[in-house]
Length: 444
Ligand SMILES: Cc1cc2nc3c(=O)[nH]c(=O)nc-3n(C[C@H](O)[C@H](O)[C@H](O)COP(=O)(O)OP(=O)(O)OC[C@H]3O[C@@H](n4cnc5c(N)ncnc54)[C@H](O)[C@@H]3O)c2cc1C
Figure 1 (spheres, rainbow, N blue to C red):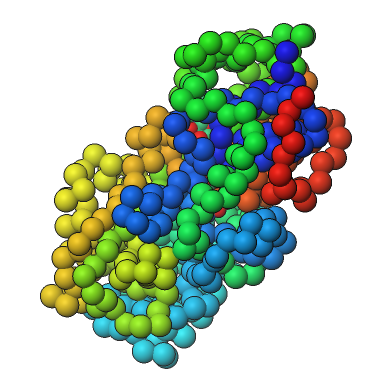
Figure 2: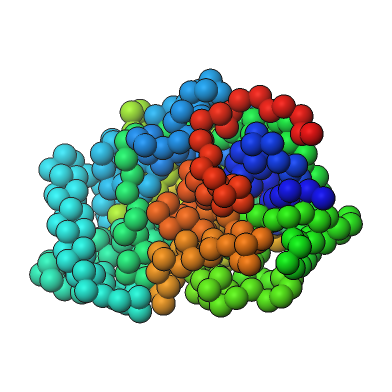
């Protein structure tokens, strides 16, 4: 019998499998896709890297990925606007009338965001799980006493913040949802593609690709995991299927999951967040800016474009759709989506914005092995729900993955740390993260 079965070869599953294998366990990883990496997925079909899932390390300070990147010798490019910051790096801010904001206007804008953020923190100090981010935003704006246009610019910014950070509309998100959302240090992206990390972690592991898990049955003796290609037995199992998949119930758990785990799965939200990359024949936006941003109502739905030319070596912009709008565009054709984005860009740049020569568009909510992009604290849930999902069930069933890590949900490093935590619980002993990148001896 195996020691541990790991369901899912994303960063959480691969981290857990690698640590357990290095500790001498017999481990098998079952992955439904024909590739490893899950929501870390680099498309190289055009001859350069396009990260269709995660792109950024959200803060290099005290982040286990920093050392892993150094050990693997991966190239990175500094790009510290990965978390919907208002400033901190040069951004071409365009106001409601499309005018490029001058220095004084930008400074006023940044001061307004700072003021509103401080008031927001005070506004939610006493609120419970049932207040929405939208309600807390309105209370905050009422307190500022600002005029309609000034307040509305902040309102739109706060809306875009939950759409990007949570993949959900501001009315769906709990007021406390972004309490843990701190970025420490610079952010970076990967010219060679982010999925170099899961590919490195996969080396030397027994991974069964194209193997879909359909059922997990636990007993006093251990677990049986049924797949479309046969059954596997082990002493313990770590399930890292995304929250969207768990919510859909496509994996049958027997006996049924206890409320302590089923409750958080039901309460937490699975957000939708999609990327649209556009490659242009030439650059038409100013040099030296990290992003182009359109403020206020004209910035709905498309408001931010990130210059990712340094990754591809070609003039390229990346924009995002989050929340219900991200789900809506999944029903549109690529041509409709590109035309919509170009309409917003041309509203700023006119005919100077040429027709793109290539595009890449993601549809994560329709992907049956993700059913969304990342988890968020929905109204009625709390950060505690993330960690509660990972509490061992009957000592043999463990959940890991970004949705189970309350301190850093929705991130690569949160998923990685959740895999580390699960491996330690399986082994019942602390496991150093150092060595994750080392060569593995074959299993006994
Ligand atoms: C568009 C997008 C942009 C993002 N940007 C960033 C970013 O810039 N920075 C950042 O830190 N994070 C980002 N994230 C989040 C980050 O990608 C995830 O938090 C992280 O990769 C999740 O890893 P995981 O191992 O928990 O899950 P996954 O990577 O989803 O791995 C789970 C695996 O389980 C498999 N699976 C599902 N069902 C079954 C089944 N029944 N049987 C077998 N296998 C199954 C899946 O195929 C998948 O491979 C982004 C995510 C998206 C979608």
